[in-house]
Image (tube, rainbow, N blue to C red; front, side, top):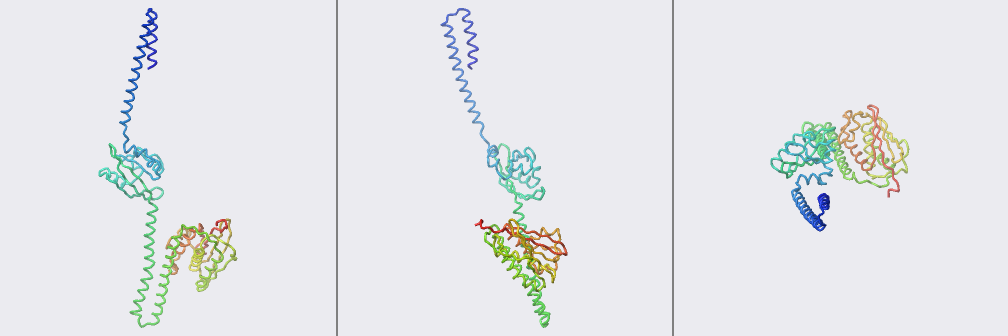
Length: 405
């Protein structure tokens, strides 16, 4: 506006001077120009403010824009995505982009989540404007189980917000529980059926046969002991799992634990004429942990070595001191374990295919207990084996240090 005033005023003053117009007229005219330009400028500024104000009030934020720009959406660790009524992704947060491995905005939701259940859920929520949740699975490198929660977004067109949660771990736990109950039922049903069958035989056909009755009673006793082992191992596993995330800090005498386990297993070993030898004395060696649980580790490993070892065979116990761990290895000359089955040894009730003849003497929970105890102690279990030649189970437990206290 100032430039316009100068452009108009200067030529006018020049012309008035050329034509010898009195200075009073020139001054009056310039003053009038100045007043006119001043009020015109004020009016324009006022109109500009009014227009800007109207523009501001017209920009009412929608629910879609609020959600899209909110930190709850953009910075959420859960994958979140906004989809329109045409099943096109309108916006996604960084977590969803990471989940998809790229930018899915502008693409159909089916490309990122290949699930007809999701399409049906979006169609349903668009029709009814209600909250919905749906479970579905997708295949990436492995099968993933996901839970999608869907919310409608108020907008001139239909938008749906999806929040996705990975529930694969929960599904795995549920499956583990189901398998566990199934396995326990099976393991208990077999000896119970055997016991009931022999009791019926004793009460019926073998009622007067003392020799048969004696044999049957021995079998009943064996089956009852098998059930007792299973129940004891289940209780032990339950106790270990309860304390798995509580790190123990006791000063434990490793040699005393090994000798205690040897005393408990010597009777069973002698019945099978198996000798157990310590390759060296383990004395004044201390580890960090819980005494009872460390004894239980060695009892389970020695019991496995005795159970699956050859009669009149030999079991060796070796010690090795490492930088941070004390390592104890239990070596037998038993049936061995197929290489492809070693990774599954610590699963509950898992037994190698070549151990069928020994299953009556094992609950299948011993190595699962060992795994959970070592997890609690931040220890390690290593297994090497060769079919027909024997196995080596090595346990590493963190050393004890006075600095821990």
